[in-house]
Structures are given as C-alpha cells and as structure tokens.
Image (cartoon, rainbow, N blue to C red):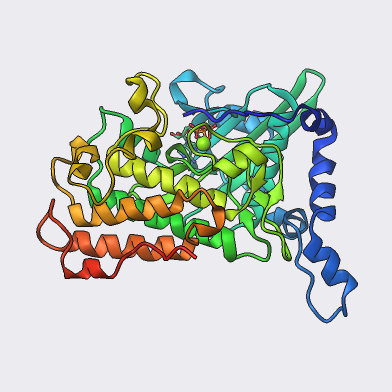
Length: 386
Ligand SMILES: Nc1ncnc2c1ncn2[C@@H]1O[C@H](COP(=O)(O)OP(=O)(O)OP(=O)(O)O)[C@@H](O)[C@H]1O
Ligand SMILES: [Mg+2]
C-alpha cells in the first residue's frame, strides 16, 4: 500500500526548502530534555538528538556515486524493479565492495521520485535514523547517494536485500502460499522487538509512525525487519505526553488523536500495531475499497464480531483453514482491542505487546488447533485499563 500524506501542513512543506539544516535545527531546539540537562547541574549526561548521534556514526554508511548505483541496477532496469511506494521505486541490485575486491553483495536500492522537498525530507530522516539504529529487527541501511545537479536532485538509499518480500505480500497476495498462523505471530513478535528498541532502547525515544504490513520485510528465514524510517520522529521528552505535528501516514493505520489533533506519541505506534494484529487475524487489509461499504474499514467490520462472541471465528482468515488456535486468536483480538483504545494512555506498552505475542505463540504450540483456550486462558493477555 502506498504511503501518502494527508492533512498535509502546507506551511510546513514550504519551509522544507532548506530541509537538511532544518531537520537538524528542529531537533536541536525541540529537545527539551537536552535543554534541561544542559541547564541543570551538568552531572547528567545530555541526551543527544538523532542528528547528533548520526554525526558520530555517519562514517559507517557508504556514499555511492549515481553511476555506481546505475551500474548496480543495469541502468535502473524495469526487470530489476521489485517494488514501488510513495517515495519512489525499489530495485534489486548488486554492489561491489568499496575496494573492488571480494564478492558482490545483493542490495535493494530505493530511488526517490522527483517529488521535491517532502521527498528529500523523508530521505534525510531515513538516512539519519537508520544511520543511528542497530537492531536485528530493523532493516540495515548500507549507504546512500545524494546529487544536487543542474538537471535536478537525485536521492537514493541502499539497503540490505530482503529476499522474502513484505508481510503485506504474504498476507494479501493470493499467488503466494498462505502464511501459517504461528509464523504470523512470530513475525509480529519480531517487529514488536524492533519497535521496543525504538521506543525505549536508544538514548532518544523514537516514534516509528508508519507501522503497516508493507513496511515489514522478511529475510530468507521469514525473520522480519522494519523498513522505511522516512516518517520516524523523536518522541516527547520530560513530562510531555506527545509531540505535536502535522499528520502524515497511511489511511487505516493512524491513531485517532494523531489524525484529529496531530498528537504523536509511541502510543500512536501501538494503535497501528492493533490494526496489523487484526490484519493477521482476518487476512484483510485495514482499508479495502472494493468490498461492501460495511466491510471496507476493517476496524468497523470486526466490531460486529467481538472476541468473546460465538461469531468471532467468522472473521478469521479463511486461508488458515482452521489451522490455528481459536483460543489464542480470541486473546489476540482482545489484545488488539486494547491497542485500539481511543485514549492513548489506556493502550498497552510495547513490552506488553511482546509478552502477549509470546503467550499466543506458546498457546499455538499446543497440539490441538482451532479450539478454545485451555486453562491458561485465565492468565489474560489483555492489560488492565488504568
Ligand atoms: N530492503 C529491501 N529488500 C527487498 N525488498 C524491498 C526492500 N525495501 C523495499 N522492498 C520492496 O519494495 C516494496 C516497496 O517498498 P516501499 O517502502 O517503497 O513502499 P511501500 O512500503 O509499499 O509503501 P510506502 O511508500 O508507503 O512505505 C516493498 O513492499 C518490498 O517488496
Ligand atoms: Mg515501505
């Protein structure tokens, strides 16, 4: 599904004309923790912003020439094109080690459409965030190419190649074999670990902001990695509950307080996680315009089949053909409902998401399938609403 911008803040888009320095300055001045720590006794180490952390690590990224990437993709051959998103086209390519010696490496190369400043801003955010993070469930950025020539700008990103496409492909593309129930849970557990690292494992909190199935890429062993950091943002610091920003993202996945009020927090990612939980349960997309009106919006449709009702099993992905644990599916649906609480404070934290998925995987290991939960179900996976 293509990512698009909505409720776009036009004034902000205009200011993007000097977006490279803007992103750095913006982050510097909007980091109250940094300000506070600098003003206070001085004994505490100051948390650094993403651009500051990036400065320390940028040497790890390889800077490619446009010609190198053109050669790597046979001149951006249509035959090597593996995907297309809101940012541009993605090509499979082969790059040589910088010294020219050793085996070539398979890579994915994303080439920005010439769609101006918003694209540049996302490209820059992606380089900086992916240049800083390091986790087995986040895609690795190997390098980039940035050209400001007389004939316009070129922005490209070079990633490790993920041979098994995206979770979106495996859930919704009928040509591919059905993704088994347990594998669905394991994939989401993997990306939840990646999100936990972003939410709490770095010096700064990172809000991912674009959690959806097309951004979950799979390696040869179906090990998942989150990709696409163009919309990622530093989280609020100090006593703040959210950062205020113009909503951007993908229809169907964004949290209501973010869409309606521009309030962004890690709990916005948890909402999107809840949407994806329902997608793996039902095998339906968050938004499907070719269905009858009552079924187009996944979250409205599933409301008619509550997790505790007899009708619940009717929403389970028919492609699973009863090869799943009904008990675990009910618990996952209840947990998804808690992620989808209107009040962000009532949503679980990512650590609770991880715990619930681990439990659901454990239940799904038990021999019988398509059955109700055993005695273990008394330990509810749904966190208590405060
Ligand atoms: N590192 C990678 N390795 C292999 N394939 C990739 C890689 N990155 C992207 N792709 C492929 O390219 C497709 C398009 O990715 P892209 O992120 O540009 O668009 P999208 O996720 O579909 O939409 P959006 O622009 O909203 O994120 C992915 O679905 C995936 O199949
Ligand atoms: Mg994507």
